[in-house]
Image (cartoon, rainbow, N blue to C red; front, side):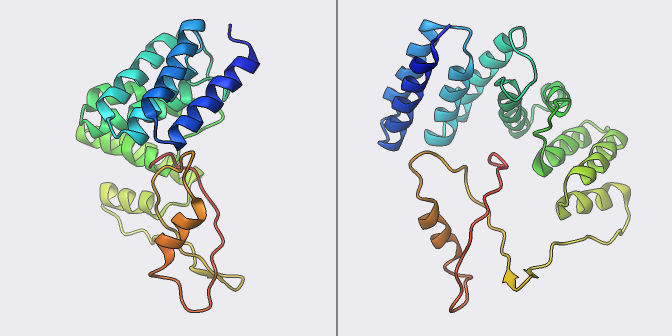
Length: 224
């Protein structure tokens, strides 16, 4: 088992290498950690994240996530202290993107069963889309109905209307509330080294009105 101090040192060094765009050194840090303790599978997750979010190599990332999942399913529980829920979020999405729908189903099933839940509107939509491709329309509708209980996403209701061939009104969040104009924007995953304020300024510069200032509320959807 790796001492806590050593874990912090490895993670801090790897993050710094990522900020400096020295990604191979960051990967070496985590591989060093795996040599010290092959059962500490957070490092396999972190390596996958470097390949996915920094190097944009989804196939190599997929292999690291798959290794983490296959090893971890015998080692870890489903608590928030385990990497399993996080690796399943990434694996289910990547498998869906690869259109390997039959392989994606057990990943979604395992992921959606976790408590507390980390299943967000995009996950419900991907799961339902996977089921739809496999002609499991009834199950897809059940998943989206469940999604309505956890999310106010208008996208879920629109997809439900499509599958059920209904025209249920779609509730949208009011743009102006308590004197503030709210403008949701989609970002990539925020990573160590990213300048959040510069990012928000760039993304809102064309839609802000004169005299407006922005206040950020980051909602993690893990590259939904």
